Length: 286
Ligand SMILES: O=c1[nH]c(=O)c2[nH]c(=O)[nH]c2[nH]1
Image 1 (tube, rainbow, N blue to C red):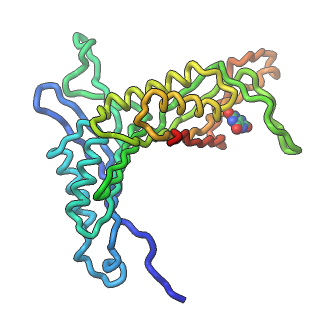
Image 2 (image 1 turned 180 degrees about the vertical axis):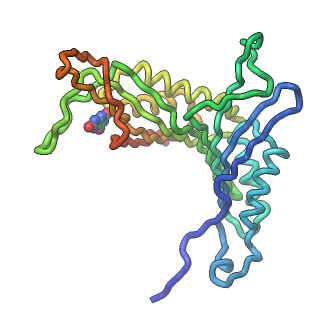
Image 3 (image 1 turned 90 degrees about the horizontal axis):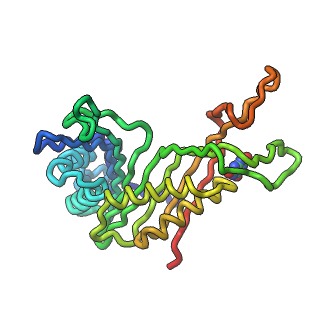
């Protein structure tokens, strides 16, 4: 029975890179979590303890920080592409490099007299939502996947869930007017990315998702994801597919009858766990 080394890759995960742009009085902040991973022929490191082909993960970390200065972070996608290309070039045994970047957003603090512009160098962290970029670089192509996580949205009406399959274990009541809420993870893969304005594209996809969520009557979270994904593919022809993971954040109507109080969809308990998990990929035919 033969035993062999299978797929392997290595890199530095979750470098917390904070880049301040301070060329003028008005600073900008890019707050990143950067992971890099190289793959290729690293068999001798595993089988023979030979490190001669291995660019250390410590060097990958250093490059992530150095590139935040040398290349800058005009967008997370631009930065990830540059970093991936650099690590691939620096490592002859590598056939590919995968870079994942998460960006935590900060808003300017608004103080008296400063209402329109916000403070030049004081920021408040925007909770929750994280922007993501994943870039895969090989010698002949770059694949860019943009995205976001923890986009928390809620509709207080305009959502039902009825007509579902029932069996002996089904207790769920039909809901013709319920709260629909989720903490959305979405990622969209670009078929063409040359010359893309990544920041504009991200804002446009995000607002398309939000608009579709807000304006579509929902018969199930599944249908809402389909409508949101289709709207994004219609808006941006360069996007090949979009994938969603959407926890159904259940809001259960509280029974106030024991207290003689009516509850017409006004008081809910927001359940933490378990949650329905609805996942879907919407793809463009090629
Ligand atoms: O939008 C929904 N989809 C489901 O598949 C489902 N299942 C369930 O119990 N509630 C819901 N809601």
